[in-house]
Length: 197
Image (cartoon, rainbow, N blue to C red; front, side):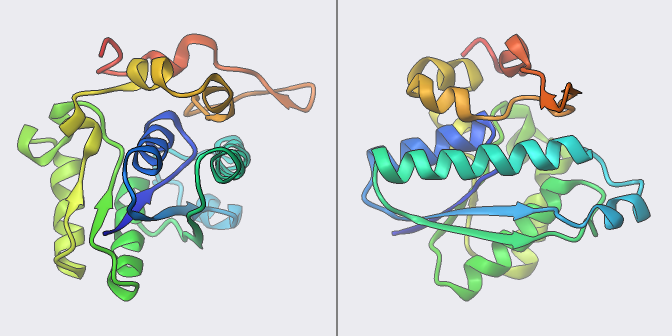
């Protein structure tokens, strides 16, 4: 089975990628959308979720985690495409680009890191419903939410991932710079809706 994991370098997607690499023999693709064109974000101020610091932190975290996983778990494909901030919600753009790439590259399933049940179409969450509709317009490849299926969240990821991988993950949606370095988020990484699992 060929599995595409939508990968940002954050805890949710890192845990999914690690678990799929560890627990399956799937042909795995870690698929990341990189937003390198800061001018597009400045021209599209309605784009939610992104700031320039997060773009940089995400890139460093994702690249570091990929190197660690390839050295310590097993090899897999790491594909990075350039996003253009055409969607107001970045998750929508990620699944759109992932679905297009998956269709062209014979992928069997797409995994996306939503953790709380109400963030899924079954739970009625508008963004999740919209993401499934976006994928369905492009391909019949299923968009799955493994954290929901596994009934696991950020606290579970922190408890089960090797500590060196947890340390590599980004965890702030709005990281701050101090003296030219990013300030750690501390316990922000477990402040999710599903953090108790």
